[in-house]
Length: 199
Image (cartoon, rainbow, N blue to C red; front, side, top):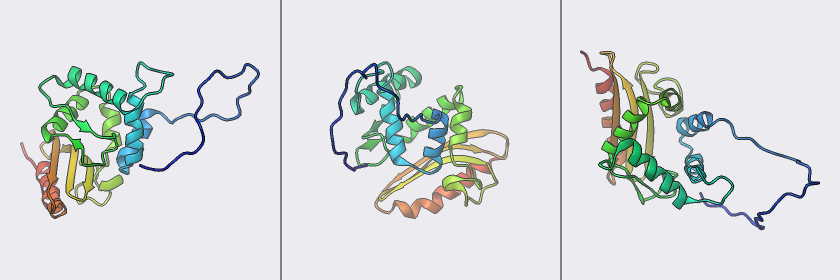
């Protein structure tokens, strides 16, 4: 986030005699999301968010306002008007202007679990004892699929825990406090508690 490009961007038609010299194709979206979530790649998260702005506007320049409009429409349609809209700033997850309640995030995860996107979403989340930010987790291998996040005054986790009673649980915890890092053991204990639930 940051950086600078020099030169000019020009839009126009390609001359008919022009030959393609180089092209790049993006990997499938599920693969990009998996890499983004497993390794907390905030720059890629921002790029995915900005790509939302292209929906229905292919071939035109779009930015944050268009991406926010697409998200707002989807959010209202899938989660209803009673679920407060998130404020995502630049879409990267970084910044003081990001606002998302734990209850809204839990509703989003419930919606995702019941959708056709669930397999790709679950596969994109770090798995306990396997990969990403949970590779050193004390939980059984694959018992939790959680996205973790931390900033100076924030510790958070959200995702799915497979409890001992066979149920899958949505778990969301967000700590906003100058001493948020001190809550990490409590968050780990919360995940263990959710995983140990019996019938």
